Length: 306
Ligand SMILES: Nc1nc2c(ncn2[C@@H]2O[C@H](COP(=O)(O)OP(=O)(O)OP(=O)(O)O)[C@@H](O)[C@H]2O)c(=O)[nH]1
Ligand SMILES: [Mg+2]
Ligand SMILES: [Zn+2]
Image (cartoon, rainbow, N blue to C red; front, side, top):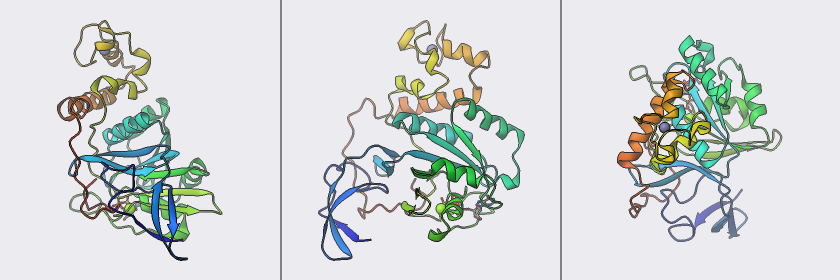
């Protein structure tokens, strides 16, 4: 292991990004000593999973070169937020990376509504693993699903990302903390995205800080429906063809499918909300403003920032 610094302010090729480098990046280094080096260049990324950082007004990478995104949710405390998972699913569809939904804390029980919603995700082709870091249910399944891959664990603060990782890779323990009783949400215990690996297990995973919001900016509103697998086969079948926004038009095949119950109404509601957000704030039309550089130029995220 070598501690490396960046030459200059940015690694070439990453100008305009909120963070200079991201967990999972592969770089070329110039060794200085047996324990130190300088990062010279970024090996082109296979893919990058991230979001738009509103404060910094720039794209922020959560992880690069990932094979699978594991969205951790909890059944309760903090509450199950399927619309958050919908947003994550749009981003994974956009960057073409498979999504696993790890529904954690099942030792606390799953209510029927949440079971129904998880079933919807499964019928859409997303893998759902019901698990518990507390009683170890589903851990073997989760481990098998990520073996041999680079997996990034994302999700709201307090859902148990670090706790799951501690069970999967007990030798590289991560800090965890109680969910606040008052606000029923996590305390942003993890503040740095880190790649952890175990050669014996052939598991590489990236723990990330929890985030509260997932702003959507870099999708053209008319492209959004193509990131909803349930809408994909219907596209082009609306009366207004490709120009249909699927929000109000007569003869809309998507809306008809919602009415027939073939598209789950709550997923359609997510579509409407994300679409409205993209129409009012999206960067799809505007030329992107010059992004502000993060203050410390490191891949450290401040509490509550993402
Ligand atoms: N009952 C129960 N509690 C759990 C389980 N997994 C984690 N917890 C608890 O949930 C709390 C938050 O867990 P963390 O692992 O710190 O959550 P995190 O997702 O890493 O949170 P951030 O780092 O803030 O993003 C801790 O008190 C854990 O003990 C579980 O399967 N069941
Ligand atoms: Mg954590
Ligand atoms: Zn339509």
